[in-house]
Length: 521
Image (cartoon, rainbow, N blue to C red):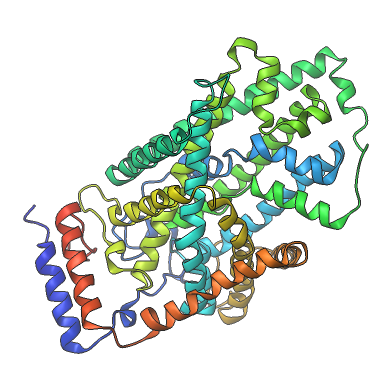
């Protein structure tokens, strides 16, 4: 251990030096790394793409598993009902699913250019910061940190727990607090895995992604067999446009349900620095993943429509489970287990990317400095992982309200994605390609169309649910005083500075973490 500087001494010397120079931490935020005219792909394999200590371990295959595993959660087993009850017909539902996949792929294509040009983890947080500055980026970070990430993890953990318990309490509901307690155990387990080893995290992600693809393949094969049998299953698809609606509001809500099932298409951009070859692997992984998920989702929906009548689908709270109960008999318990596996893998992906988002934000001095620290032996961002998980555990006590909170801030999600896409257009003007070449340069038609779509997804909630939308914007506005007082202000109370130093020193001792230093061998 002697090869590493003493964490307590390092931190105290830094704190003393900062006070001596009367310099604010915000002046020391790291500059983003851009693709330069002289930079070659091989230059990215020497671990010096950024000052972070996380190593590039993620292969192309694992990158695909991260995207696919993050997208496929419980949505495909639940969202078919939400899509159909709004759009009204089988044909309309399949169009919505197709459009959702294409729209997500278009956004991912735009993010591929941004991710190969701005060689930094953090996805839209990093891209918005580069294009529009730290204030706009902090607004995105604030909502992600206090609501979106922890609430989403809480919801997915509870869903995972509910489906694990379903085969056990098949004839009756599970005991009152059992799902919440099991959800806490699941979160603690994943926190341990993500703190111990990036390799373990990748093994978990790969295994559970393959498991959920296996479950969907089982449903798809069952659907094909049913269609080959013929009646009465073929007749379920005989009137694809029956009940179709032209109501723009309902179609919009159906689109929201479809896009919900594609959440996670940008997750690989949160860990760009850990890809072995981001210039090659990021675009390829995005292309493979979105194509695979879109095809799988379409075929899964066709199988659902072949096996279930429209009324059965609309009456179901979990279409996949209803399908399994009808066709798998005594083996129907396998579907809830597969849904639980799907949720577990998605939760692992959310925790992985959340910790990297907070690490990048801490490097930019927009979150506590502690969150930028990494264990030099395990090479994992332990404080950022624990911060993400503990927030989610706290939200378990508000489990009845987390769904409402997520609904409030959905508009902010599309607002941030729209800002990142607008940033792509702005950077084309600010940093033209003749001076700053892009490894991947998308046709401007795609970001323009995608940006228009994001604006539509922002406007629709304003019309459909103005009160909820205004509450969401109000929550977003709380970031402004926080930024002005704790980020932008040059003056920090001595009590706060001392508290921050003491917490950092304690964490360094407890978790053996430190900030990366370039002179470590």
